[in-house]
Image 1: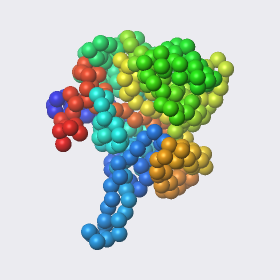
Image 2: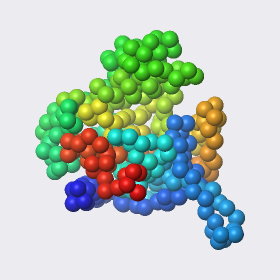
Image 3: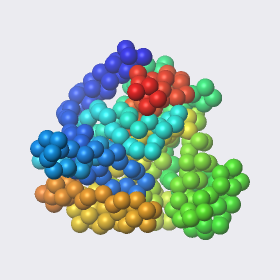
Amino acid sequence: MLRTRAAALARIREFFSARGSLEVETPALVASPGVDAHLDAIEATLRPGGVHGTAVRQWLRTSPEYHMKRLLAAGSGSIFQLGKAWRDGEVGDLHEPEFTMLEWYSTGLNDWELMNETEELVRDLAAEFGGGRLRTSSMEAVAEHGGPPFDRITFRSAFLQHTGLDPETADPRSLGRMLRASGTKPPGQATREDLVDLLLGCVVQPQLGQGVPVFVTDWPTDRAGLAQIRPGRDPDKLPAAARFELYACGIELCNGYHELTDAAEQQARIDHENRRRLDAQKEPYPMDEHFLDALRAGLPQCAGNALGVDRLLLLLLGLERLSQVRCFTLESL
């Protein structure tokens, strides 16, 4: 496994270097871990002046996104990073608090074009390490060179196809009934958004990426994160986030955006996520003013993607748990 991981990381580096992307490193300890109501960071207290010095609160990064965008605004051009990220409260067959993330930003591309680049990367790794397949013990997705193109389906269409409900208009009662029918009891204080998320994870996601990997595109605007908003690709052209996720064998592999460049809009979204954290009785995170200053200075038009390397290795080798592709897990520290 050590040799396989090393070879896969080297192959990823070759892929991006061949495309003129520059490998970078950014801090693991950050003053703001990014703001997402559903993601919790791991806090670390520093004392730069020694044991009796003033304590400084920092967090292990949940993603290197903010610092990488500061490099983009400074003129780096296309960049990528292979490194660790941390998220609290995430343990299971497909989750570890510490994991290996590939994050990259390609200047001049939009989300649709970045999906093409992502597909090329996955096909390249599948050809080298997976016999042209991504697989678990019960499912398989073809990703060989010259094979069928990866599917693309909008969030709304995927939801309708696998639940019969429209995520834009379904009322909470209908969402709750569908959850209970699937064997999941909705939390007592669940919001409508919570119910949609639960259905996505419990009902929709396990059915995605059978036979061939699939990109889920055009996410609801309330899930835009750091993505631009544009007319959607559904027939009614409702506004949608320029965001995609790639699924194979029922497993989410990555999360990509056509990146938002408007600092004022980004600040408003961060404020909104912090209010949602407060509503969920979580502590809000500090605003990263350096990141906002970088957006104000001018972020180039670009698309970015964050891919879970451990999960991709799991599917390349046909395994079931992250512990099978990692040297150490939380239980073995």
